[in-house]
Structures are given as C-alpha cells and as structure tokens.
Amino acid sequence: MPRTRSADYGVTGFDVPLPGTFEEAVRRHESLVPDHRAAEVRAIVRFGGSWESALALAAGNAPHGSTTFWKNAGTALMTLAWDSTPFVMDLMGNYAIAERMFRHEPSAMMHAPLRTGIYRGALLP
Image (cartoon, rainbow, N blue to C red; front, side, top):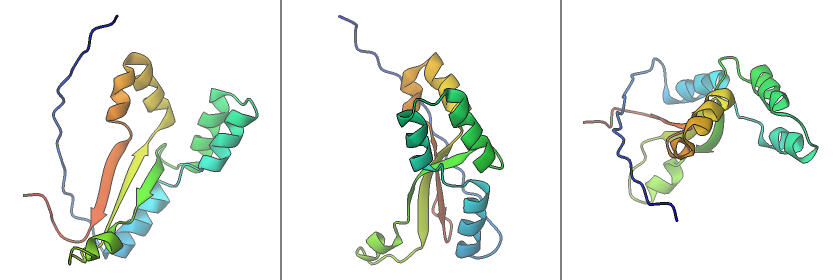
C-alpha cells in the first residue's frame, strides 16, 4: 500500500490597485479572462474530440490563453453579515499549463487554477 505523503506550500497574496470603478474592473477582467465555455468542452469530450480540440477552443476564446473556470459574485451573501463590500472571486487558468502541472504532479491541481478576487478597497493587511 502506498504511504501517505504531505507537502507544505507557501501562499503569497497580492493586492493590486486597479483603475476605475469596481464594475469597470470586473468587465475588464471578464474581457481578458473569458468564461471557458464548459458546454463546448463537454461536447468535445462527449463526441470523442481530442486534446488539441480543447486547446484550439481555448486559444480561440481566450486572448491571453487563460479562461475562467468558476466565478462567484458573493456580495449578496456577505450583506447578510452586514458587509456590502462588492467582490467577485474566480478560478482562472490555462489548459496547457494545467496539463503540464498535472502530468508532473497531479496534486498540483490543488493549487491550480489560480484564485483571483476583485473587490472594492484593500483587504490585505
């Protein structure tokens, strides 16, 4: 039986001021890191498409190679805790880079895709 392993990874957060309003920052991010088009990816898999087909979809969809795999606009939930700071969190990444990471070490997927957040005001200490 394989032995249990553990690995410690350091995490660094970046708080980057963005120009414009919160809404403008979200729109800009969505234009640069578009949705990964899950229905089209599922169709490629369902109809026996190739890895190259998935890469071509991403290349045609994402101007900088990265797409958004998941998005949560959590502002409404946080208002229940009396905090109305607008924020959006997402998971973004690049298919080809993720595949190389996975091939090298499958547990790397615990840290990919990249977590990003856009919110009004600085929250890091």
